[in-house]
Image (cartoon, rainbow, N blue to C red):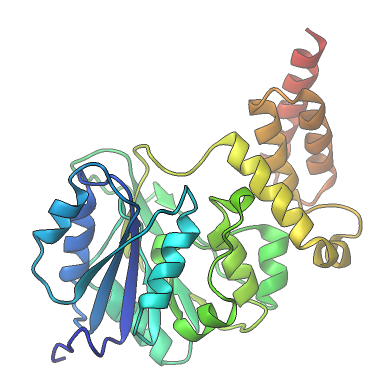
Length: 302
């Protein structure tokens, strides 16, 4: 396929970054090495204080552009700026410490051009270099059943951000990702939920088409988990009540139980672990919830 210019890309790739000079070169190279060439790459830099911009400027590809932002810790603001700056029919998301396999875009765009609206796939989890691929170490996804909206609320997030390619029109229709502070770390999941109100055409690709860096620096913490899930439980309260009555789904109560225990909120840890034990969850999660209940009781009584 002949290369298209950045003025007429089929897909726009959005990479938010902050102080990633040590790894962003690998991320950008994985885009340049794609077997599909009809893309533009929009890098949203959150005023990095290292030499991230210098690293980026070493790539002379005209399809690469840089935007500056002060996002105040709200990564959704960076992604939304990338969406607004994009020209492609599709948007692909890639975190600045993750990277793709060369055929990623070719496989994803084929599925989208055949009728899917949002595609995603597993990623290999990497915590050190050089890369050693182990099939059992993946960031797993799962196929979604219709209605996708109900599946996501019932079973939790099935989609890894750096694997997604989606029609830009749907992102525009939901006005991008939510920029609420209490949703930092789960704004992508909230976005997939809102898109699932508009289309059922979510497709999980069978191939593992990239790598997820798990060596530190990712947006995960007990405090974020607690605030994210409480925010989501309020945002979708009407829908959750319709599906579960007065209860919450087991994946959510388990996440709240773990976060509460980590934050030494033992009364809440007991409450959410008991709710998990009453919910429809796997035996593995049931045993973990029971362990959280026991630890919460022991620590609370000290």
